[in-house]
Structures are given as C-alpha cells and as structure tokens.
Image 1: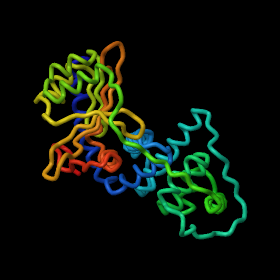
Image 2: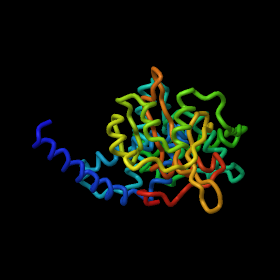
Image 3: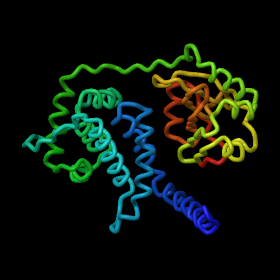
Image 4: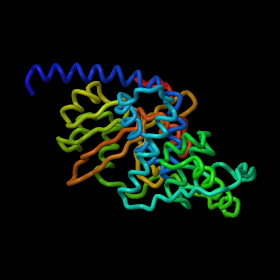
Length: 312
C-alpha cells in the first residue's frame, strides 16, 4: 500500500469510528430488545448473537440509503428479520407461507407463560411465522409495520397471528432446560492456554496461536495476526483475572472472572478454534453487553458492569 492510500485508509477508519459511535448512541435503547428478538427467532443464543452482530453491521452500513425519516427500532428489526429469513432460505429451509384469510382478532391467552411461548415458537413454526408473531405480539409493532418487515400484507399478519394463537392454546409446552456445568475433557491446547492466561503469561498465550490467527472482539476490535495482538490487545499484558472452562448453551467456553466486592463477576467469555495444533481463531464477547448479561444469568454469576473502555 502506498503512502497516500495508507493515509486515506487511516483517515477513513478514524471517521468510521466517529460515525459508529454516533450510530451506537442512536440505537442504544433498542439493542436489548433486538438481542432478545434475535435470540428467540433463531432459537439459539449463539446464532442469535451472530444475527445481532450481522444486523448492527448491515444497519450501520445501510443508513446512507435512507432519504426519509427513519424509526431506528423498526429499521433494526426490519434488517434482523430480512437477514434471518434470507439465511434460512440459503439453507433451503421452508420459511412458511402467510395466507390472508378473514379471522377474528383475539387477545393473547393470559395463562400462557411468555418465556415458554418464546422458546416454543421457533421450534414449532416456520421462520416467517415465528418472526411475525414475535414482532406483532411481543415487540408490539403494528400489523402494517410487520407486513413491511416480513414482505406480506397486514391482513396476512392478522390472520397468521390468529391461527398461531389457536395452535398455542391447544399445545403442551416443553421446557427447554439448559444445564450449565464444567466441561469434560479439555483439548490439551486449551489446558495450556488456561494456564498461560491464569499466569498472565503473554508470550505463553501467543505461542499457542498460529501466526495468522484472528482475534474477533465484536463491537470492539479485530486483529489478524499475532504481531497485531502483541502490539494491540496484549500490548500492556494480561489483566491477571481467573479463567475457567464452562459449558454455556451447549458449547465449551472459557469464562474470565473479575473478583468483585460481592464475589466473582464475569469479565469476558471466550471461544477458540484449533487446527493443526494451533489456535487459529479467538473470539471474545467482552464488548457484547446483551450476550454477557444473558450468559451471566445462565451461568449463575454476576456480570462485571464497570469495565475498562466499555460504557455500559
């Protein structure tokens, strides 16, 4: 890269960061609801977090195409919905048909537990129907707004909700119990990685990574080599917190704990991919507030809310 282009790229990155901060200020109040929607429409906190991140990136990159007054919440949910349905179609999943039929508008049945319903919907209904119900009945968008997001008609929204409510009233709900426990036999590389983390051994950690390993900390930073990590995220060493392996929503993770005044608090949650005896991909959820809060509830530990850099 020549010097002129390098200066242009650096300037562009700096301006992009400023715009991202403005974008984050605009959507801050919508993010908790958006994360919940993504979690339940995908039927997985992991897939939900990925959809949540994809939605924020697409929404941030797509705002320049709007020339009319735009409701940030409706815009984010529209992006999330179309992104999810497109992903389902690429997997050749049946996304469901929304037929417009005359049907009475009935209130939701009071004796149904909301959490049971949220868990049940994505398991038993096609993606478009589940998304439609979440948008209309849980997040209170109008039928016209939902029709625009789902690419159907308002009449189809009302009819679909009515049919789904009837099925829900006649259904037996199955609770989805998540068991959180320590992992079983760990990969030897992860064992050594944990030892290095707990000892604050930066070079020990870097020695376990391939030279071209990627570090992905969504909403925070990306690094594409151990050289970038050494001069970036690990420049000032490791925080010296305790790291332990756990099972979280069916996946092995490393939980990094900060010792708070009332006991251990979740500082970070990490995942690694290993190939040919080296860590080739490292993902940190340090900056992902909604994910950390949900994981803290699932694991039974308080989250660390006051952390360097983040503004929670």
